[in-house]
Amino acid sequence: NAGVTQTPKFQVLKTGQSMTLQCAQDMNHNSMYWYRQDPGMGLRLIYYSASEGTTDKGEVPNGYNVSRLNKREFSLRLESAAPSQTSVYFCASSPNRADMNSPLHFGNGTRLTVT
Amino acid sequence: TQLLEQSPQFLSIQEGENLTVYCNSSSVFSSLQWYRQEPGEGPVLLVTVVTGGEVKKLKRLTFQFGDARKDSSLHITAAQPGDTGLYLCAGAGSQGNLIFGKGTKLSVKP
Image 1 (cartoon, rainbow over the protein chains, first blue to last red):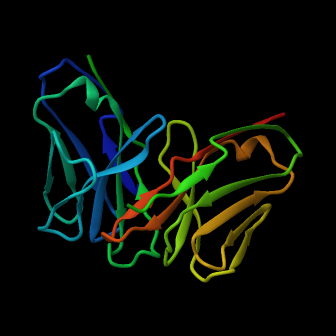
Image 2 (spheres, chains in turn cyan, green):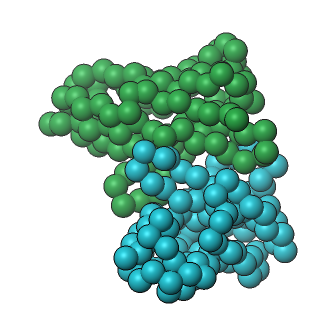
């Protein structure tokens, strides 16, 4: 099993360009998440989807949109990229958001640079 | 606002040394998780501690959850270069999502 797969691995954008980060999991998990990781800031939650058909804002949602396409896939879209969105983006999944003892399974990240 | 403070932020040691990293909060958490993240990869769960005072061992790694469930520690015995990575603690926040500490970056030199 691949677990959580993210594409692309690297991306460079110019300010104002748009792009979509893709994420898919093959573990039949109900809940999926998007985090960004910045030096000195740790992992911060952007958006999450507790179950198929639902999405909710996390700690830092401004400038992003998400789509839970189906149970497997959860995409993150930057409509107009800004240099402040330069970061490493991680997608994660878990069996059920309500069970806080169950671990998050992370992808290997997308490294995004906005110039 | 619930926060998890991790210390030290950076730690560089020689192979064979022992070390302890800490995860502290002023808030009570129902459970805490510890993850390790290697360069270029996502975090991977090491352990979940649930009961106050609980001690869990994973080979050379010993995890402890404080009696009041506000803090946790990770002790590594006889560190090896393969232990190098970013160690993150995480706890369930009041909004129902995991809150992560900023991590301890460990470097173990041969």
